[in-house]
Length: 157
Image (cartoon, rainbow, N blue to C red; front, side):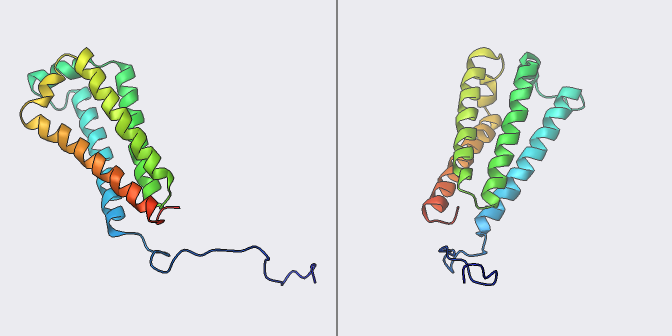
C-alpha cells in the first residue's frame, strides 16, 4: 500500500480559515497602490530636480546641491525597500512587517543625519514641506501598525 502513487499524503495539511482564505483585504490594495504611486512619483520628482527640469525654491535647491552620490544611492535603496515591503504585504507575507519596520528605521536615521549634515534640510521642516515630511512619517507608522495587526491576526503567513 505504501507504493500506491494514488494514496493521499500522510502529512497534515492545514488550510487558512475560511474568513481569510484567498481574500486580500481592501486596505492591502490601498497601501500597495499608495506605495507604488509614492515610489514612482518620488523617483520622477528626484530625477526632474537633478536634471534641472524643475527648479525648486532656494532652500530645497541648497539641500539638493549638498547631496552626494551616496545620498542618491541611499534614496534608491530606500525606494526599493519600501516597494519590497509593499509587494511583500500585497503577497500577504509576514516578512512585510520587518521590511516596513526597517524602512521606517532607515528613514528616521537618514532624516536625523541630514538634519545635522545637509544645509537647507531643516528648512524643509518649515511651512508646507513639514506637512509632507511629518505626514509621510505618520502614514508609515500607521502602515507598520496595520501590518503588525494583520500578522497577529494570522492574515500574513
